[in-house]
Length: 226
Length: 202
Image (cartoon, rainbow over all chains, first blue to last red; front, side):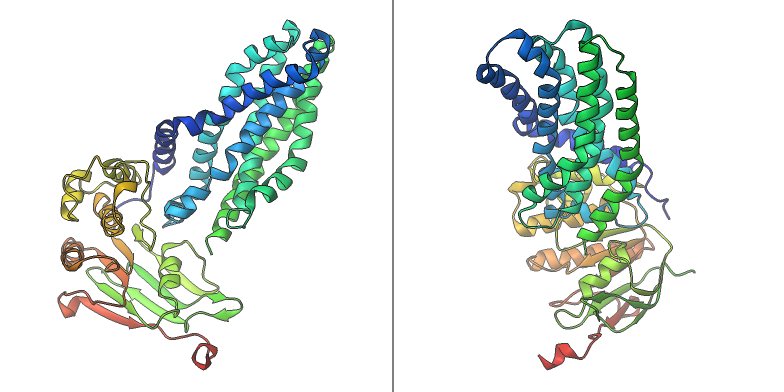
């Protein structure tokens, strides 16, 4: 009578975006968070340009990480509660595609704003201008991995009580290499060295996450529906 | 005419115990299968197995056509309007009615621009059922479709079932309170039994 679903991921992505705009305050929270960190830390450690310039890559990256983490608890939980998550598995409608759609919308809400506003943050923190390009590239390569690994942790802890603590404990060790390579690349560029090796490793890390995390996420989601 | 669903010796276990006795089930076109049985016998579990949300522990399950599943949870987003909820559903596969038509059929005419969270429990269930109409699927799986509906609502469920049969589709539904008022030739009752004896001793 009818063919299997063809455009479910697209429909889900459009609905997620619509929901994100409907709850604009909640969606802009990660960005607001980024700015709080960027503005408050210089007040705490003092406005000396040399000190801030050294800390800039790490601060932008930690802010990106926390912004991503902030939205993780709501990545799958509302869908579990209102029954839309179990609908992902009905028939042979392709769970992987929907996982990708959901991760893409998470990245658009938490990762992209950080990238867009990173030049302003870098300026406020006195990051050397020639390192700005590397900072942006490291964010473009690295923030998708934040969404992928965070998504895996969110899926695994979906039906656990007190999930947010467990979520952070799961995410942090997995994110360590990401932060080391990303901030390493920016610091090297700032010191006038070649950051290509660090960026390459960062890229490898993201590709690894892209290859494995979606399968892990769909398996973990199915487990949580039993 | 080929079967839409064929299940052979289907089993599902919880905490190491079979939930219901191994089950054979064949769903033909133009047929309503009514699942009954005491609480905890696994009606919901069976529907979720058939829907593909759970995987069977043993036995074979073949699904030969598209399906829509209406579970206990209405699968409605509170921040979207009724119309937007149905438009999303419609985009998932081959479209059926327009959202406005579907809303009228379940008795929610005129509430298209109301957000999902502003609906009552019964209205939410009706909106959940309107999801069946905006898509053109051969198999409907319905878990307790009469729950939290008034008499008029229950009559509308029977109308929906009749219209699904009329267009050549089929339905599997689990129910306690009420049996669908339909032509008995098209309705088949399946009574589930506990898989383990322990349940009786308690």
